[in-house]
Every structure is written in structure tokens, then in C-alpha cells.
Image (cartoon, rainbow, N blue to C red):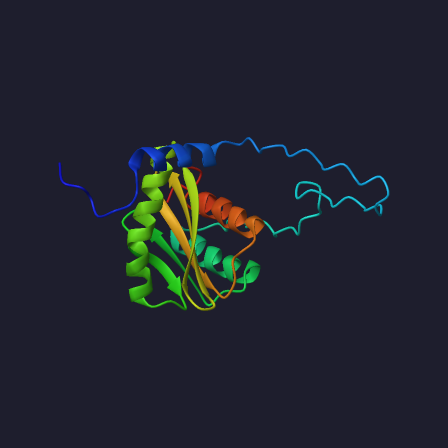
Length: 182
């Protein structure tokens, strides 16, 4: 059998993806303070720290064009971006602002990869972030609906907060969700 030039071991990759998809977070025991050492105040865990909220996306009445336009405007408000686009399952742009056609076309392969990972893990949604150049981070958020798969691509100078990405994922699902019959 011919050996692949890829260093990826499919079995190991599958196990790593399965492990990463589990909701369990390992518990690390706190180190006891030194008997004579200075007392330190405990650092709040990420789950107890206050998180900035993202204003929810309100789906406007009207056709898909109005919903997509409102979605792009909402994404522009909640994230400091250089560009944003929405694609279908094939990576074809439905709408875009501030990104070139080439950037959307290149993203099509990444969107297909994200879709493969989502399907492999049995998830209807997923996220991917990749540094494409200095101060240019591409974020992809994908969802699966009864109307097909859709993705939002966002290019910015910094990695986006989880709250923003979760908000975009929810807004994308509501824009193309089953409750919209146009």
C-alpha cells in the first residue's frame, strides 16, 4: 500500500476530534497554598466571570433579501470586521461586504472542510478560525437547516469572542430557519 504524504493519522485524528467534542472539562485540583506563603485571592473561573452580552439579532419581516441584508448589518454592528459574507452549502456567495470574490472562493474549501467535521461529529453547527495574514483572521460559522447548509465568513484583525460567534451562529440559523417560508 502506498504511503500518503500527509502526516495525519486518520484514527488518531478521529479520536482527537471525538475527545474535543465532549462537553466534559477536566477538573484540576488546586495546589495547596504554602503554609507561610502569601494569601492569594482566587481567580474567578471563566464560567463565573461576567461576559459581555451581544445584542440579539431581530429577524425582520420580509423576504430572504431583507433578512440577509439585516443579518450583514447586525454582524457589522456586533463585531469590528474588515469584511463579512454569507454563503450557501457550496461556498457560493449569497451576499458580501468588504471581501473580494477570491476570498469567498478560497473560503469555499474551508467551508466544505468545516461541514465534513460537523457531519463527522454529528453536529448541525460548527466554527472555524484561521489566521490568513498578519492582522487578518478569517472566522467561519456554519449551520445546517432544512433549506440546506449556510455559512457566515467574517474577516477581522482579531479573533472574535465566543459570544459573538455564538450570536452569529444563532442569527444565521434564524435567518435561514424553518420558520421563514420564503
